[in-house]
Length: 401
Image (cartoon, rainbow, N blue to C red; front, top):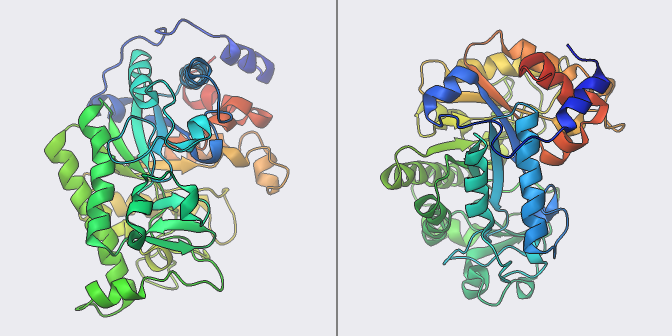
C-alpha cells in the first residue's frame, strides 16, 4: 500500500484516454464490481464548466479531465447534470441551452456536451447517468431573466415563485407531461445508461413562506384527504409515468433516484429510521421514496447519507441498515450517496477532519450485502482530494495504488 504522497502521485499521473479498456455496461457488470460513482454538477457551475463563457474546446477539455480523473480513482460511473434548471446541455427541442455553458440562456455553445460525455465516458469504460432536475426553473424569481422562448415564459401559469427561486407547479398535469417529454428526449437520442434524479421534488421548506399551489389544488385535488396527500400523489405519478416511459423507449436504460437520506423519522412513523432529522422527504418534499422502492418503480435508489458515523440525530451507521431493509425483497439496487465535500472542510465536525472517515463508511457498508455501491459528491471534491480522503477510499476499496 502506498503512503499518502505516493497515492496522490499515482492518481495524478494521466494515462491514455482508453487506458481503462472496454468494460461491459450491462447490469451484471455493476453487480459484480459495485457502482463507484461521481456526481458532476453543472448548476451554478458547481463542478463543470468551471466558469461560464469558456470556449467549446476548453469546456470539452475540462469535462474530459473529470472523466479521466474518475478512472484514475477507480470509479466506474459518472452522474452528469444535464438539465439543471429547466434547460439543457444538449440541443433540446423543448428547452433552451443552459446558461451555465455560455453565460446566456439559449445561446448555442457550439458543441453537444451530453453527446460528447456519453461517447467519452463509454470509451473509458464509465457508465454515464444523465442527471435531471424535474421542477426547478431558475435560481431567481424574475421570469424576464429567462430566455424569451423559455416554456416558463410561454406558460407563466405553470410557474410558482418560492424561496427566491422559480419552480414548475408539480400539481399541473400539463407540467408533468412536459417535464417528462423534456427529459425523455435525451433518453431517446443518446446512449445513456441511466436517468438520474436527485432530492428535489416539491421544494425544501423555507421558513415563513408558502408554496402557492392553492388554485391548482382546488382544480385538481378533489378526492384527496389533504393537500399533502395530493402533492405526494403528484410526485408518485411523475415517478411511475417516467419509469414506464423509459422502459417503452429503451428498456435497458435504468432509472435511479438519489433522495435526501431520511424518509421519515421513527418518532413520526414506526416504519421510519432511528433519526431526528429536521427534514423528512415524505412530509416536507412530498416524496414517498420508500414507496417507490417497495413498488419497484425505480431501478436503484441512492440515498444521500451525508452524515458521519455516530452523528447525533442522523447516524450513518444506523441509516445504512435501515435502507438495506427497505430494498430487501425488491429488485431495486441500493447505492449510498457519500458527502466527500465535507472531508477536510474546517466548518465540519471533527469526524470529517479524519482522512479515514469515508473509507470507514465503505467498510461498514460491506457488512450489508444489499449495498451495491457508492457515489461521491462531487467532482470538484474528487479533484481537490482534501486530506487525502478520496485517495484513501481508492486505495482501501478500489484497488488503486
